[in-house]
Amino acid sequence: MTMRVAVVGGGMAGLAAAHELASSGVEVVLFEGSDRIGGKLRLGSVAGVTLDLGAESLLARRPEALDLIHEVRLDDKVVNPETISAAIWTHGGLRPMPPTVMGIPADVVALAESGIVEGALDPHVLPVPDGDVSVAEFVSARLGRDVLDRLVEPLLGGVYAGHAARLSLRATAPQVAALGADLLAGATEARAKATASGPVFAGLVGGVGQLPAAVASTGGIEVRLDATVRSVSRRPDGWRLAVGPTTDVDLCDVDAVVVAAPAPAAARLLAEAAPDAAFALAAIDYASMAIITYVFDEPPAFQGSGLLAPPVDGTFIKAATISSNKWRWVADTGRTVIRASVGRAGETTLLQHDDGDLSARALADLRSAFGALPDPLDSVVQRWGGALPQYDVGHLDRVDVIERSVAAVPGLEVCGAALRGVGIPAVIASGRAAARRLSDAGTLDA
Ligand SMILES: Cc1cc2nc3c(=O)[nH]c(=O)nc-3n(C[C@H](O)[C@H](O)[C@H](O)COP(=O)(O)OP(=O)(O)OC[C@H]3O[C@@H](n4cnc5c(N)ncnc54)[C@H](O)[C@@H]3O)c2cc1C
Image 1: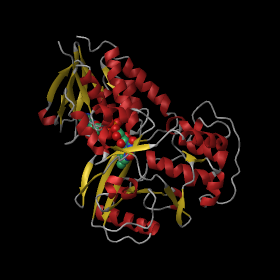
Image 2: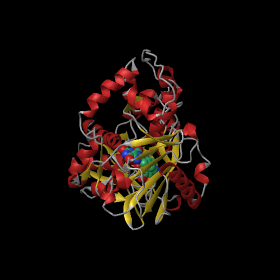
Image 3: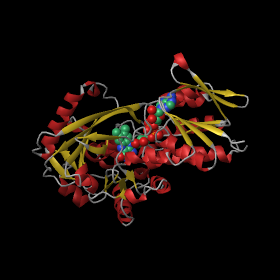
Image 4: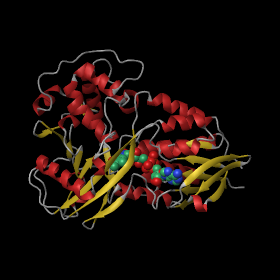
């Protein structure tokens, strides 16, 4: 008898879990609440150019995303950025980002020349605490507020849309904790090693948003769209899912379940089967944000990949990527493409602006930073409500509770960005590991 597994959530974590399960001969049905798969990966058309409106690049130093790309035969589309030289937009201008490890300066001369930090650094060599602390507490005690505010904070804002004062050092910046007591010496050494190990990022010609469909079409996965899972209940011989609108619920019986939905939905689904996990998941906060993509018919004077804006400077945008400088395939469209991102954790009013207002305000910032830009041919505002989980101090303890609670329930797994990493490789790893745990536990043996 072929075992049947339900995967709840069609983002990259759920798709990776489904792919892993289908590859091992299990029948997989993937329930996606919205009308499309991909979650935070999404393609859209702006002025007739198909572009990523969500995630747009992959960390190439972790193997999981590139391995999956290989398995779904998208290798021939893998590319590395033409440039990753970003600027920090501060003190009234674009200042070249000096080499850093997650914002920790790896070259103090380049830092001084950049003008990002005013005055000389006054570094303190302090032991790395055993327990967790906030990134802000850790960095400011060792390198001062300016390094925190103008380098580390904008970088973290780019990845987590969060605030260093809340974010866990252990969960969001383990590479910073690993630099040791002397952060500057540690960063200089780590950076030298990293430079020798090839490109940091990769993308796909045509956009990373092609990956979800490629994974879903590899076979063995039945995808059901507009299929919100409302509850997951344990039965004597497996699991029952209630799917769809409350007025027309469809019941689906399966042998095992992988929950790959964001934390608020996962908390509701696990409430009955794994209440401790549900409680811990419910406590994970999310940041909302928006990406505004503009297409112009003239290039900007700035040649780099984009900018990061320190929140301390109070700008509307928090980052911008000049996609047509960063990716050759975008430049080859003959258009200039710039993505601006707005929104950080707790900034609830910002996203209440309508699309026209968001687009105009972000464009005003782009013009202040990059200089003259013509009116765009087109722009698209993509809102990402509940975009990025916030790994607060103590996050990894919370994840331990979630994992232990779920591990105690045979035939149930959980994965996704809420747990151990928000990047695409991390969520793919999380999805595949969840699928493997089901196989290893013997749950899927007929
Ligand atoms: C704007 C933006 C840009 C980013 N850029 C990058 C980048 O360039 N590189 C990078 O590595 N990472 C990037 N990230 C992070 C990364 O894309 C995400 O963390 C990751 O894709 C999340 O994958 P996931 O599968 O865990 O969750 P999601 O992508 O959120 O997928 C979860 C899915 O579950 C569905 N769902 C929810 N509830 C239910 C339910 N009850 N029943 C059925 N389905 C349900 C949702 O509709 C969704 O499709 C970015 C994130 C954002 C928001």
